Image 1 (cartoon, helix red, strand yellow):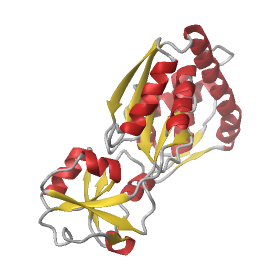
Image 2 (cartoon, rainbow, N blue to C red):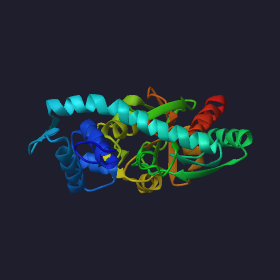
Image 3 (cartoon, rainbow, N blue to C red):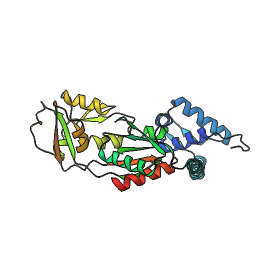
Length: 292
């Protein structure tokens, strides 16, 4: 893109949009997978092209200027349209061929594999790659483009991500060490779960998502992966919430799984980036909707 202010760089525009959402240089850098100083460089470069400040910065806050607000209003739909046009052109050129890259959290159980099988049967020219996502980073791979879509634990409240079809709700269980005082219980109430230290996902998972996976008034240790969490559970350092399929898949002699009552069920949903929807993603979403 060119203009009176010189060529506009797509990376600068992407940085502006993400910083306008986060209003925090560190979090914007995490989403862009760059350093905080690189975010500052990209913003300053865009401001030089525009000829005015788009953000006001203090030691405590980042805010859009009035010009930045107007620029955001105009840029956001235009940028989304541009990315969608590129994605649609690529999709049309390739058809439902190539490779669909999928991420998953927890367990790639029979529900996910049924959707994958249905997709493969409908589109034999398209391969699938399935990778496990870290417990602590449900959205990073989609944002980085290393997967096309992902099956993640809900909730999802990210403005740049689309939540597609959901899988059937599952009862939640509390995993505790076989030596834990609660191990002999046949069920636990929501109040008892809240009073129990629970393993929680570590950042970069957003705070609301971490709280949903570990709704405890007594936070336990933070972990990056499911296996790290189960190891802490087995050692008696904390408990952990797991849905029925994940509890069944990860059964071990030193861990006891106790059903809960009164807690919201665990639900998985298919997500993809708002600007990265392709025909492959749409077709897989249809397969999930038909089988989940």
